[in-house]
Length: 269
Image (cartoon, rainbow, N blue to C red):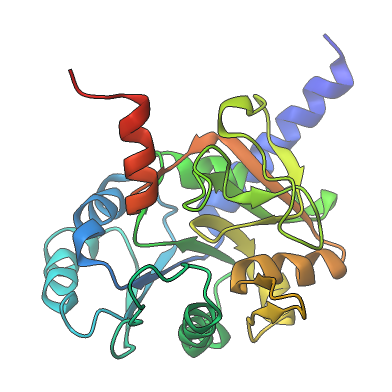
């Protein structure tokens, strides 16, 4: 065993524990899918969260989620979070039948919603949690353990299946385009560097995030588009930050495409 390596690991562990105990964390989540609400709310009620955590709810359900969210806050969540910031965001996006989830109109809509709240988030770290993604209960702690400020890590992401290609992780190794998505069944054991990630369950240093606001999509002449999360990663990389995916933070993705794909892998008998 290398004594220097052991000392470094011990120091990193102490720094991670100190960060967990003393930093402020903003959990930012956009709610528009009532059908996946209960598993995500259960995660918020039972997962490990830092002691100085704040909850930002953007209600884009058109009001159908308001009663459920308010009841969850009153009954189970308020002892776990120091404050709830609630923002009504109007009606959910109205997609046309068969429309691609990456349609530019949808991406612009999501970007606009996040820009309503992100400029006002003052906590030191931001945890994006989408309303159809369920991380492991210790996922937040595992993400923040990898921040390594001295190493320039500004983003650490959990992994989950891509809705358009469920055999792949919703991430990309390429640093400019959404290319070279890692295979879901070929993940390494340790965190690895990526070029971009989806926002499903992602920890971002807020001082880095604030430098690139407002979040925005990027559209290319050939019809290719980067959503708010992919383009955010490109802009953070341009500032010199590193991005990591954590393969042991495997999250369930409750979108219809992934659910249908996983049903073929584990058919009922």
